[in-house]
Image (cartoon, rainbow, N blue to C red; front, top):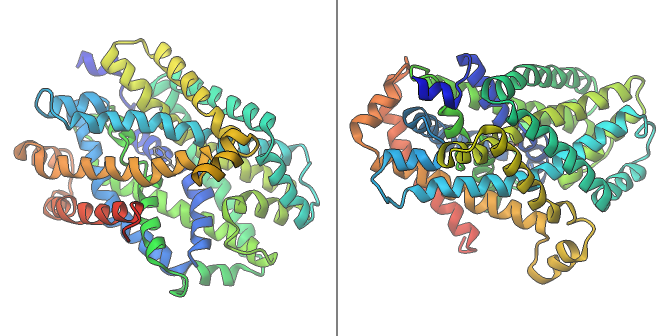
Length: 454
Ligand code: PHE
């Protein structure tokens, strides 16, 4: 179809899976998952997280992909096309576009830290640091307005450049290079981790059943994180699905993406926890875990400089393929709904997001967006955006998507779209059951928790 060609389409099915897995695998897997696992005490948390991915995440992933594939539109247009005129469901699409702006604005700040650490590693500045120095270095980065703004701007510029180049020549081409590179780097790090004295303890920590620290809050954290890590609830998978060929297998693709995403999250733990345990660091070190742990472990090792450079570069790659998908949601809206040329859409939305990220970049230094705001409302700007997105926007978007597909979408169309191109058609009933019952119930818990009822 001419219209499809004009919108852009993946060159191949593998290209789609790599791009979508690139969206899913990101800072959420390598930066966030290990530290929340550490804070929640390991084993049981991991198990619950995997259950959430399987029972809540994957059904929504398939739902999003088939919505995009059926409508050949990004979120706002997709909900408009598939529901009645003036239908309130279109708000779900809007929510996604807004979430893209919010998430990318602070995501880019953390990606900026990864860029800065890549630079520090390559230049040798991290070599031979003591535990204190490593901690001070992270503190200095966190509280420097100049470094935060600089790297945030650099990262946004790279992201804009890729989205500017288009679906095949930008997004897919980069995912094809960055994803395998990231995977290899992670495996190289694992080879190093396996040899550390703390490896056995790390294995036990991540896969052993330790229930002591598990609280209701950490169960909900696992559920919330399964949305973030799979890029669900804001139309990223829907948008990527809209570039998927009509006969592509959405069910198998969802499973492949989910497996890749979880494998990377677990690998990241198996790289980081041996380091923390071998160096007497607490697994519950919080957001600084990656940024303190890796330099500490590698600073003293022969070849450590190379390994830590590789590690932080891997973090940048993972963040980049996710950031691209966030910017693509915002960009696709202006292309599909406002008829803008791609380049203008990518540039203007990207610049707007870069500006929106300034308060987050200054959260560690400015009184207004940082300490002062924290004293006044309990969260600095960065934390507020992360909280709004992870605890409200994504779960809400995911639940609305599940309800839309589960109850509102034309029955025949739903079944036909699920079956199209897949050999796993026998999963249809279970999928529908999960969308209709498991997802809304799980989500209701997330909201009650966010409201402080639980
Ligand atoms: N899934 C990405 C990660 O784990 C983050 C993301 C969320 C990307 C929502 C796109 C949409 O880092």
